[in-house]
Length: 135
Image (cartoon, rainbow, N blue to C red; front, side, top):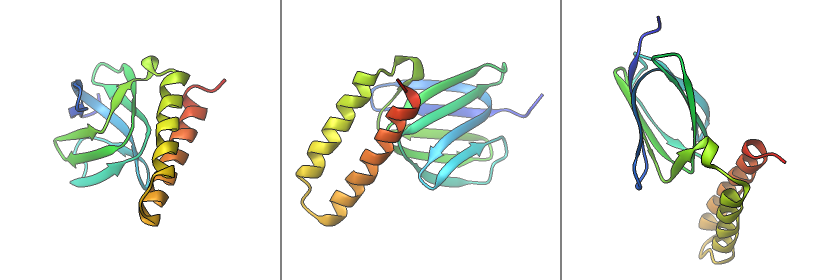
């Protein structure tokens, strides 16, 4: 049996996961990242995407996150999401509302730097929309 570690997925609304797990795959800003027990200490930002959690029991659960950051230690991983929900709760309407909100924010951006960040976020949301709830 694989070594396990503590994993917590927290959003401002609630604690979604607090379990012993054997593996977590997170959508880090610089690329997908797999976290295992005894991982080197790392802190990374998270982009919109799917978090795959393999529980100690072997069962896999998936969650959608909309940004945040992860704090990884050899004994555990805490992902603090700006917003998160179980994958099965995500609908096309949920993502479309977020996409429309991001487009409005781009129109009202007060600097080129802010606009560029919002455009990147919009691209990530659009990709998520196409992969998670593909028609």
